[in-house]
Length: 457
Image: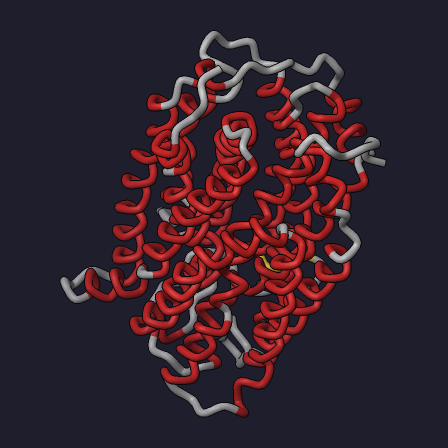
């Protein structure tokens, strides 16, 4: 098998720019778009308020069910990919087939066309659920292929750095949405039209990038895999029998849930709690992104010297502190200076949590391959994704319900509710610290390097 070049790795990681765009659209702006504040000028498109069990909103319920669908489909897609006998490889054909529907659903989520809220509820459900299905069909094979393509440990860390870099730069463009929307509104477009035109541009760019590795990478030049023969249930049971896998997955469940709370509410934190105008929110978001990018080389070197465990713990501690600080926003002076200082504070955890979780999981997957001699990258990635996405679905379901706590009559957002989201998100992030502390990274790294003994328990 050929050794993959850095330029080929860069091409392979380009779709993460699109994923960063799409993820920002859904995580940062979906609730803001469909549960709008009066100042946003956005129309009421879907059913508002609690609609189920006296505590769940339409958008929260739909998005939470989308994450469940996504999670349940992950192992199925992983098994199909792991056992694929396609002449072009096990992973690349999935990328070619599902790039367009993935990008199209990301756009159509925001294009509900009806005057009747109930019909728009249905539209939203169809395309959010479609988005998560096609995300799985594209991203599970894509994620599974990277540990197969890259066999050198140092280069693997670099690969996940590129992976994260493209995701963050795509997210940065996504964070520019309010500024782009403001420019479009100045042409006379309505707020809803301005948001949709912005997302149309994002979808076109994203679709083009999703196709790059599908045709630029010849999978069989780099990968010679032993396909698993065990049924899906047996493969999943094997994955969860690995203690290292269980700990890393649980840690990423808690850390990812805390991040989900933060991302879903970031626009509210900036505009409602910090009193920053919507069109200026890009300055705050850009500060955190630029700050994190500046720290990427340091985090990369740090993880190569000490491993991933210590940086992950430090990143989670700092991020939990940032979420708790939000609860004391009234103690600090209002204005851009405070918001920018906060953005710089979260730069370190953003850098760590963008680069290292994928690399840490790749170590665990390679450890299993060393011990068993069978390539089950897709199944491990899907099993981890299944657990973490269920956690994200819980966060997605809870956040819209929390943000309405204390809201004035006719409003969908309350200050008390926003503070509650910060407390809950911080608590989840702290829980991840306790779990990561139990992870035996030394055993995993030793086995990968050929000096470890014993199998995972």
